Image 1: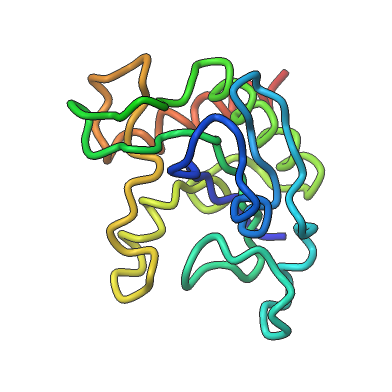
Image 2: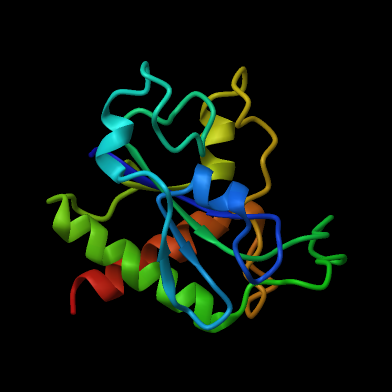
Length: 161
């Protein structure tokens, strides 16, 4: 595996059947980590159609880890009724660090990315324009372009412990 792509599901605090199809791991409202249908290794070869399709243009070698939340999100002033919770965020960042160790990866901009960041890197892909993850509910002053750095710092902190 080469990297972890972080998402929000754009759903409620409970994963849907579609979420289980598209992400390797999901974080529910209690911070529990739930396994999706596919193993991360299924994304080593995405030509067979049997993989977690979580990040258009960047699925091969990528692990999809999603926060179950953000249904109704429009922008930081209109976040809908399901903003992800701090317990979810912390569980996600911690589990991301665990996955990095498992796959012998170091936390960096190359190994931990948000779906939003991938969309900016690949403007002609279906990931272009994605808003996950551009908003930190308990740190609303963090801009979309800085959210990934905030998350990587949290992941690094967990990684070093």
